Length: 114
Length: 110
Image (cartoon, each protein chain N blue to C red):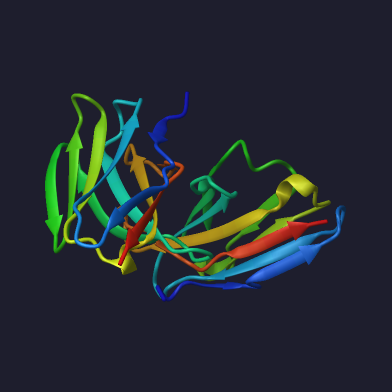
């Protein structure tokens, strides 16, 4: 257990519904990342926060996806109008300071869109 | 062409064997190189990271980077059944985006 928690751990939803995931970082970790991982693939970068500022977004993050990190603490990732192709594991990672090579991952939220 | 290529395996070895896991990458701007271990249905766990070329050792694990050939390796000595997992290489230019390989599944047989 790295100390990064994610909620829920599993989510089953119907196509077209909205879902929201939460990530609670290790205390005082100012860097926070969201990744998506599908079966047989490595994590794909979605977005990065430094404190409360969203500094980078992947082209993978379509306009149906939005992420927030109010007050630089926990973060939420929302997917609107879910599609079957959104089925994946959504991973949150956090890190201290400015060193991008150290990231501590949470257990992930596994999403299944029916 | 993917920026980071990794053989998905699976790789099956007997307990006690030396394991060699490898990745190649295409972007010469990558400076940081990481290895993560991921057990089934868990998040990745950082094993080691190196900066630029050279070797780094931590217990039974040795990470090696050869920037001239854009090749990174992880060696596991005296492999144990508990080492059975997916191993992900990852790299970063120093910016915010980390690129992961697809992972190699390793099975260590008792």
